[in-house]
Image (cartoon, rainbow, N blue to C red; front, side, top):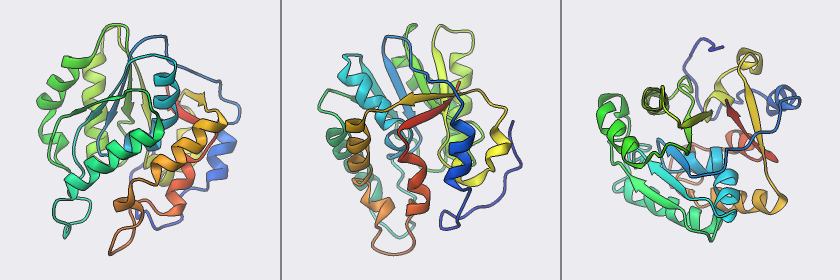
Length: 237
């Protein structure tokens, strides 16, 4: 069930992590079917925040893993020149720290904040890499960020009626929505080993532009990062 969207600020406390832990405690474990994995990321960092553990363990198990990087996130801070280049480098560094196994990265290059204006460009990029037996990890279409929502909608259209299995991940919904507002959704938990939890935590720290910017408030302050430190990753099935 989608709740009413409202303006939010990452610095605000947001929904208590314990509320989400209580909601997810009784939800079943889940994992993709054997085969290729495609993780669609509206901005560099979304893929590791939401599915870094899955990426690592799936790649180590010998399955092909591809990250489709939709935008470069260049507009996160308006005064920061060449931020897109910095964020792409942070992503590559984060993936290398996350897992030594190969993870392919495909850059779409849609302008940050404008995914809703380029649905066909994203659709063509998806259709070029999706295979019938793969699993698509996509953003939740009601996450509350325009790029996340638009990306999720395009992913739903592309996979409708296909053999591709799609599951969705929240990023800002953890912060924005009360847990009870999303309790009716079907959730699955992908369990992470202790080694994977440590590797994911190190990889997240590579996104210094979002965690420790040279000016202004961080986009990923500690109260937001707490949602991504669980011993599992939660997906909407």
